[in-house]
Amino acid sequence: MTNGTTPPPRPTTARSWLREHSELGVCFLLLVLGVLVLTDALTMSVDLTQRGPVGPRTVPVVVGAGLLVVALLLAVDVLRGGRGEAEGGEDVDLGEPADRRTVALLTGVFLAFAVLIGPLGFPISGALLFWGSAYALGSRHHDRDPLIAAGLSLVTYFVFDNLLGVPLPGGPLMGVL
Image (tube, rainbow, N blue to C red; front, side, top):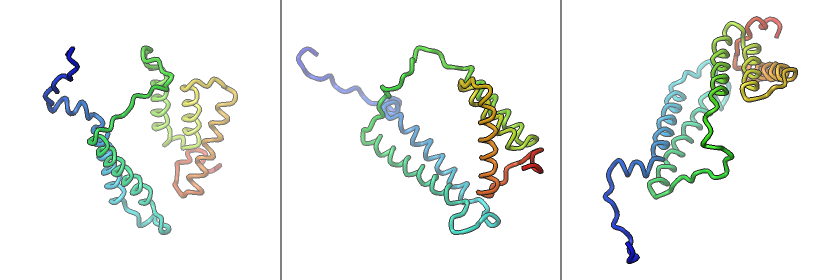
């Protein structure tokens, strides 16, 4: 190697080729997700919910088609030799362990929301979701956060239930709201 020549290329195996083109895994996941979204959108019943030229199928069809287009474009780029670059601007110390407490708290908050939305309704369980998420992510404003969470939950409930026509469970507050 001291004479300035490059070493001969190593034989390419299927495993090494896949390792060099690992981004194709992301392409495959996007493709599967796009097919699932399109299949679900095109097989949904829209007779009762159709209100005009833009129905409930429109957004899922656009999102599913977009996923397929992105999967195709990414696959073409990877096969032409494109490579993803590692992010250099992140302020993350990779030597530190993961923050399992925050992940556990967020998981608990989402599971509690899923369990409580039926009996308590969206306004109450949504407020608990928003407040619990803020707490899990580090906010310690115990006087302000519950009020913001309740307001955000009520606004979300009214927007979905009244403006968009998406019925959300009201729970015990159904007669009040």
